[in-house]
Amino acid sequence: MQGPGMCLKLFLAFALLLLQCVEGGEVGRNHRDANVTGRCIEKERQALLAFKRGMVDKFDVLSSWGLEIQKQDCCRWIGVSCSNQTGHVLQLDLSYKVMDEHYYSLEGKMISPKLIELQYLHHLDLHGINFNGSQFPNFIGSLSNLRYLDLSDTLLGGKFPSQVGNLTNLQHLGLSFNDFTNAENLDWLPLLSSLRYLDLSGTNLSNVLDWPEAINKLPELTNLTLWECDLPSPILSPLSYINSSKSLASADLSFNHLSTSIFLWLSNYNTSLVYLDLTNNFLAGSIPDVLGNMSTLAHLDLSNNQLEGGDPHSFSRLCSLQSLDLATNRLNVSGQLAKFVQILFSTCAQNSLEILDLSWNGIAGSLPDLTKLSSLATLLLNNNKFSGVISGTHFSKLSKLQVLDFSWNDLAGSLPDLTNLSSLEILFLHNNQLSRAIPEIFGSVFSKLF
Ligand SMILES: *[C@@H]1O[C@H](CO)[C@@H](O)[C@H](O)[C@H]1NC(C)=O
Ligand SMILES: *[C@@H]1O[C@H](CO)[C@@H](O)[C@H](O)[C@H]1NC(C)=O
Ligand SMILES: *[C@@H]1O[C@H](CO)[C@@H](O)[C@H](O)[C@H]1NC(C)=O
Ligand SMILES: *[C@@H]1O[C@H](CO)[C@@H](O)[C@H](O)[C@H]1NC(C)=O
Ligand SMILES: *[C@@H]1O[C@H](CO)[C@@H](O)[C@H](O)[C@H]1NC(C)=O
Ligand SMILES: *[C@@H]1O[C@H](CO)[C@@H](O)[C@H](O)[C@H]1NC(C)=O
Ligand SMILES: *[C@@H]1O[C@H](CO)[C@@H](O)[C@H](O)[C@H]1NC(C)=O
Ligand SMILES: *[C@@H]1O[C@H](CO)[C@@H](O)[C@H](O)[C@H]1NC(C)=O
Ligand SMILES: *[C@@H]1O[C@H](CO)[C@@H](O)[C@H](O)[C@H]1NC(C)=O
Ligand SMILES: *[C@@H]1O[C@H](CO)[C@@H](O)[C@H](O)[C@H]1NC(C)=O
Ligand SMILES: CC(=O)N[C@H]1CO[C@H](CO)[C@@H](O)[C@@H]1O
Image (tube, rainbow, N blue to C red):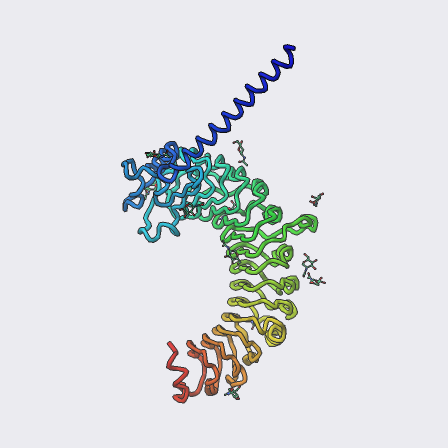
């Protein structure tokens, strides 16, 4: 019968074709495999050379990048890494991290649009190269394989590049300190659902009232840096946070316009937050209770605000706290410092706290009892109004204390026996009313001073 015979023939022909294709592919790949270590892909080499032409390389940092026959393999050029399997350029890293040892001094006129040829690129780091106001290159939104993009401190200009929202594989995005115009919104941000690291410092976000919601929608985000962004304080609506992410470990929101409502937003992260920097904001009044539930917090910087203390219980559950900076606030106002310190130091933080800074607060009264802070290494109480004598009981057991600053207070009397402070390296006592010079008997300790 003709029908089935024809079918069989067709089938055989097709099978043969398939086989050839497979073999062909196989051979081709083997062939290329053997040679990719020796030579990069020509089209990508040309793209890199075009990129180099957009740079100002006064000190010949990119000397390994060239047309010469011995420089043919662009995979060996400084800052370039290729796939061992395919030879495609995967990584271009000209940040100071890589270039430092090569006398970093690269500048740029423009980021060449030819870079679009590097379609397999997943890591692009030009951190710190001065592009002197050159426009952010739009094509970067089309490098869809990018997982890591760092264009921080590049002085790129133009409109804020919201087209990075098209780079849906991004895990790391650094765009801090450029010359972009204000970001109008962060509507593009939730598209980056794999993002773990975000740094937009120095970008004016004063008009982006819903920035907290945009951040909440990033399920994998662990590191957030938004300092000097003119950030407005969150407007709290309980609904906004219902589906919030829970992953944030590190938040630097310093130098903004935040009020204490920020703490309520941050309580979304009360099981993940390890590092929190809110220095130089508009935090005023009491430290809210919610802070006390951030039991994973290890580093807390609230300096340069107008905080007046708070319910001492605010700190009662901070069992991992290692450093607490409350410098330059108004802890003198409420007059409950003694109670505050007492509670802080009678809770679990007493065993973990290594750095305590209460300087520049105008705090009056006698020195608090610090004996329980067994891990304390740095204690800064300078520029307050502490009065009375320094008693040995204030710190007789602080064997790990290395830095102690009591300067600019109203302390009187003589210095107690400090021989038990066996780790002490730096001691500031000046500008007090202390009656005697430092006794010689403590020579063993003071030989280490200054
Ligand atoms: C590629 O090969 C080099 C040298 O053999 C090796 O050091 C490097 O780790 C490999 N890279 C990848 C991504 O496998
Ligand atoms: C930066 O650009 C300005 C013009 O926008 C120009 O006058 C200046 O010379 C440039 N600086 C450098 C270092 O190229
Ligand atoms: C993504 O790219 C498309 C076309 O390339 C563009 O129209 C769109 O505006 C981009 N999206 C964002 C968020 O920039
Ligand atoms: C940020 O933008 C707002 C609104 O456009 C403006 O009032 C403010 O001065 C800007 N901040 C800085 C630091 O330029
Ligand atoms: C929270 O997420 C669920 C499931 O994705 C969705 O149905 C719900 O509408 C979301 N709620 C809010 C307030 O966004
Ligand atoms: C992210 O934050 C954590 C916790 O503070 C820190 O240990 C880590 O180094 C940060 N990662 C990056 C890439 O900055
Ligand atoms: C702190 O945590 C406790 C127990 O998990 C909870 O009952 C309390 O409501 C929390 N307080 C705040 C202010 O979130
Ligand atoms: C974390 O904060 C939420 C409110 O945002 C609260 O309901 C919860 O009890 C807190 N969890 C802990 C462990 O404190
Ligand atoms: C708190 O300290 C500030 C600055 O040292 C001072 O101006 C203020 O009068 C003090 N207030 C009280 C109540 O002691
Ligand atoms: C130093 O420590 C020892 C042992 O803990 C203690 O007996 C002694 O009183 C302490 N000396 C001073 C001056 O605090
Ligand atoms: C296996 C293979 O094709 N090797 C080739 C790699 O490239 C060199 C020239 O650069 C050829 O000589 C090899 O034959």
